[in-house]
Image 1 (cartoon, rainbow, N blue to C red):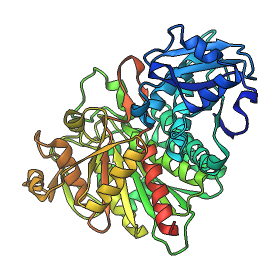
Image 2: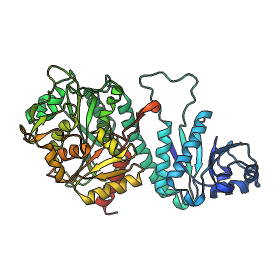
Image 3: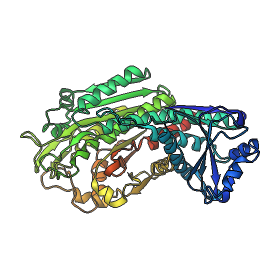
Image 4: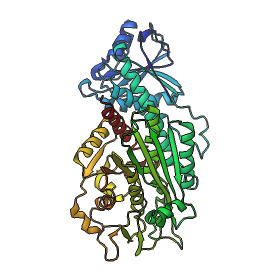
Length: 495
């Protein structure tokens, strides 16, 4: 999707559709008021007929006198004092949905005064791109389906143009990252295999000259001693891959931020097989890896002044004669032995070796993302992602970035009190800790492999995709990661 920033006389700007806001009691936003003046009160006259009285809904007006726009879409924004970025983007969903129904491909949005700052302009671009996304890789488009909006221009005053252009540049890049993550997540498991993910990572490096990609094969991982990761892939005919994407946008000696994403391209549970109902959704078990792809792409296209490494351990988890069995003991790259009590707790097995592997990069901070536990959904529902870290400062940084990006997290403990649930009679650690606090003990398992650096874990099991009739990938937590990386770049550059 294309975004533009425009200025000048709003009434004289040509566009197929001009979108402006109206508050409750028919109070016009600043841009709507300027249009009303240009039309000699035609907009106010329309509203006096009873439209948008409560500041909800929409009204489409054609051929208003005195303005160049072919149509004006008036969108209800509710009470003026309560209208914030969240309410504005929700109202925008209504507006863009209406435009999509009409098949309009271009529109101009004039944000209310006070809500035309960097954060709102960026959020607007992200919301518009999100609504324009259509999955069509493995299905024919619906007959006579109207095309989604292709170009959205945003009108801002001259004084705010610089911030708005930066917001659009960032918003467009993050939207590209979100779309990549959504597309990878939505692809079926017979297409989006570990080999496919590796090929996409190599293709990204061809398209983005600032990006370098390396793919480790199973023989490489065997030589390194990644026994935990390879134990998961043994049950599949698809070979595992360890994908490493590197972006050097910072100073040569600056320590990198490292993102690690679980890339389980399909999870049947292995020998501890999952119930058949909704098992198709286990193609989304690679959403953590997809978010690493998306965040890396966003950082490259924003040209952030940071060094960034994205690592995706990719595998399938299927039942087979060679698959892990409950009671098996495997040796991880760290040297710690793991008793596998449940083969469906495989994500932590591929992550723990990846988390040990990234020590070689001497990272400034490591964030891992994984659709790790159904227990996190039980604890938090599907609104925030679960945040786990023993680093209070890092927890605050991620929470603030999530709030700013409308991609929120909620912190849960990783206290040592939970570690005893992972005790094993036959290995250094068990791969599950029982029913109690399942999301927490999963994070505590990972914590044993992250003592060499600052680390946080995001459990995105409840936020990575939407279930039900609107089933599909959300692209989260790419917006959160992008905001975190932007702030890392600002801190490193002293801005």
